[in-house]
Length: 459
Image (cartoon, rainbow, N blue to C red; front, top):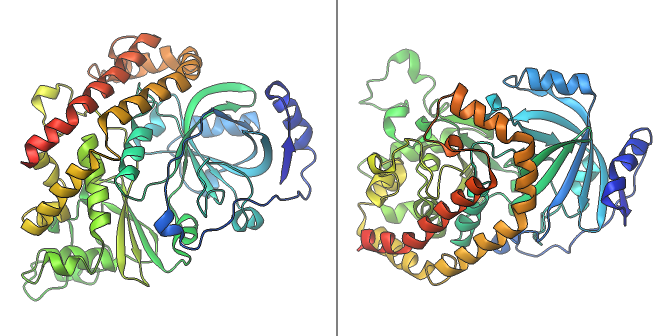
């Protein structure tokens, strides 16, 4: 790995081409000093006040193969890539692997990508400031996501949702904005995010004795009907009982460890022995509040039943819920006419998840949630502070959005409105900058009204 100081942006790609043939052993630099308790001090947001730049160089035929086969997954569909990152005063050159990233978004014209860094030295040392946050694992990573945000015309909903969720105490992946170039071609504005996986978790809790599962479909809603159990009164066919407590449901994808703890949690919640007090021995009020409050405030039911991670620390026997892919939020919904779908109310949200639906009947939890939510409006969810933050993001991103629209605007407009026929989505008007500003105003309006709406519901 080589760190280059003081390189001007217009010379970056020339430097990169030079370095393509000079891939020997590289020096390392030290990063921030470790803290003694990184989990307690963990914060995901201290966003950069400038847009960093990532340059990727990959064989053109290999890149075209990936773009032509976006739904293919696995290491066999990874291609070698050269990474050049310009972060504040440092310019960093690395080898990496490149893959297409996403679920449904793999079909969108503007692709999201994953970058894999497998250099053990990179993983074990603080190398450079990929993210601006000064946390113990701030510069440690082995995989990052380049999120195209193609489906969100505001460009900020996922970023802002993660910011809000972290502000109310929940664990979230770190996110920032970057401009991306591939083979000298501008690819526009992207969100860079750390991937949630065992390496990331190990740097936070200091060990890798974990269960990590990703809820990828709405069957990951922690409801009993989506699970098979060994139980004396079970009606599950004998042919399926052997899989009980092994595969919790088709909604989860196992990332590390095993799936038994999720199945046991759901089975216990539906049993007569369930109690809120015992649940507090399995997780923390901070975890439950932070995750649900973040989803509730931003009006995101999508994350309550999928697009989240379940993490069990086997040594403490405490689990966390980690939000992921939070762009269907902040005034944007999946059903079109907002008058016909009340996704944002407390009652509509709790039924989306078996755990929160269960504890919503406990007066102690409800009282705790009301108190914490009211307090949050004077701190992390302060309306004026959030509105000011959106103004700062607008100023930061405007030039980048102009570039992105010049590259992708017409293509995405044609895809979403004409090919897919999604007239109620963000691209239903035009691809002009004014549409972006209108979408930001939708978010502002949502936040301006959200505190009063929530307080009225909770009372």
